[in-house]
Length: 230
Image: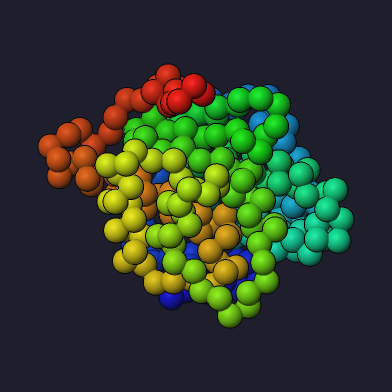
């Protein structure tokens, strides 16, 4: 299994990552801008990381390990200054969500004024998640230096930071993730690992649809995510 050095380097998950959903550099630049509030928060993250680490984030997946490293540093700071936690989580979550939105056809759903529960919802498969909740987990997790975690468990649990999937896709995604080795706690909560999990989930859903004789990609719209009085 690959490991990171100071939050940089190769992904902790196998290099055999799904690539068909990744956008080219030109395509990334052509994606429509996000809502202004998301843009402001994400750019705030870019400035904070550059000030702290001397590296400017560019919304490309390859630089997510830099965000991993920044959040690992920020975790110590926010444990001492809890009032800083929401601001850092909102900014880093908006940035992470933007990396995903520019990689996969998707949009922001912004219910209410609290960014914690804003979602990125996908167009090609039924998948949604709350980027800020992912980041809050990374900042507030327990200290278990020797712990290893199974990517197929909490990523699909009833936890509010888990992936929202159709029930018929949940088993396929869990099976694909279960094939991966357990990872350290640091790797498990890192945004770069979460990106890998999302890529794998999209690929697993497409494979299940293909095996069932369906089109690999759906054509979902925001209304398709209206559930239970949302």
